[in-house]
Length: 179
Image 1 (cartoon, helix red, strand yellow):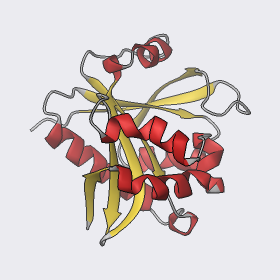
Image 2 (spheres, one colour):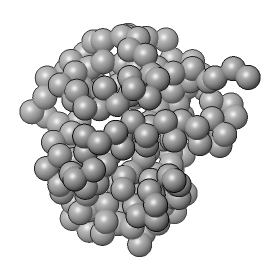
Image 3 (tube, one colour):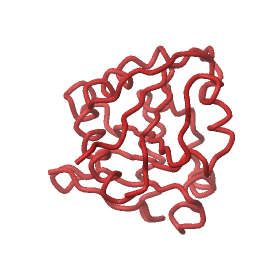
Image 4 (cartoon, one colour):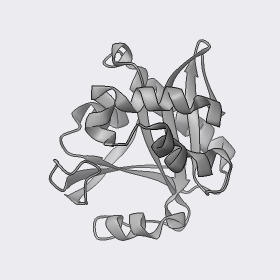
């Protein structure tokens, strides 16, 4: 069973370890020093930022990280997306990683995204949809989104997280399910 809990400062060493893994570092391109992890995850852990960082826990073991936020809380993301697709006022976005490379390629990412969306709809009753930009070369990520039920709605240029990448992105979307 997959469960979720908010990241706390006690989780920062685990996040640093995951962010340093080659399969994560390739796409997240994140500093992994204790100071950098505190700088980037501390405000959310202290609930000073509007986004949420959650640990995905499978059978009692942390396996991944999920970030979720309302896009309009981050106008620069809306600016990136609006040339490619409509962004409703209560659209959310997610970002995610699987920490251990041994868990990659076994359907855990798809399972994580499905579970994340179930919890997102429950926790954020006003969320209209989820919109996720993914670099076009990150096939594992966009395939997991497709398997989890998101549809590719656009493609175009967005500045990448990793400066070695070009600007090609796919944009995925899932609307709130109707009862």
